[in-house]
Image (cartoon, rainbow, N blue to C red; front, side, top):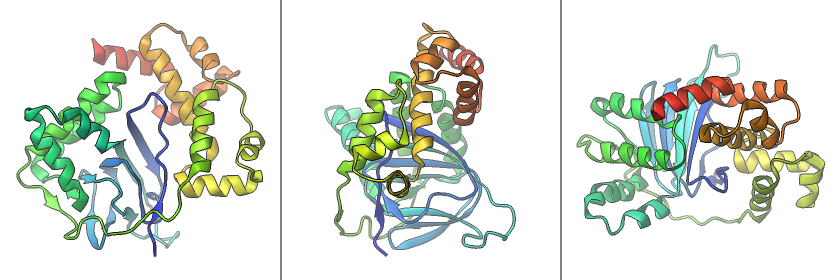
Length: 291
């Protein structure tokens, strides 16, 4: 089966995307994307498919997956809905490794990070000895914003680059394949949402933008981004609210209305679903860490 090429949703001002997954199953099917991926498994286990290789994965492990490397985390009991309790919780970080390598190319001290990024074409598992330290830094990264997040990522990569017991998952690296389709339609949708998230946006309006019916568009968007359109719109709006809270210039109501909401109750519900905290808890936690 040809791996699926999909787009990682990122904001216009976002170099690094940090996602906290709390799902029944990890994303299917086998897929690849342009972004480098770091994933910490918080809960769950099963089989990790990387290129031609399959290895078991479990709670607490950290993996690095390079640009365009086909992969999928598949829970134990996949395909058997009545198999019992399943859970897929993880922190995943996505970024453009070419941009990062370009920013480090004239820094001799960053050679180990550059080499680590090059080796990621094979898929990498961080050693047991380093996992605790890297896990703490990945958890901390979820609360960082703006340039602090970039520095936090460099710190994580530098820590992993010192690991002399890294495990390479695939012996072949990225197989030779081409992206058989580009995705201008979904890029058009991303650009539209990033420019208009503070306004009222309807499914019918966005579907018409790419000449699709709402039903066809919903299937298309989920297939290409591994998210529903409504969830993507919520995440974009809440990410903007987090940015406003972090700047400490806006109160909760202002963050709500400047992020496309006209209802505080709905805003609070969506904010908690994305961050696991109320807006006030988020501000207090982020500012406390910054101080």
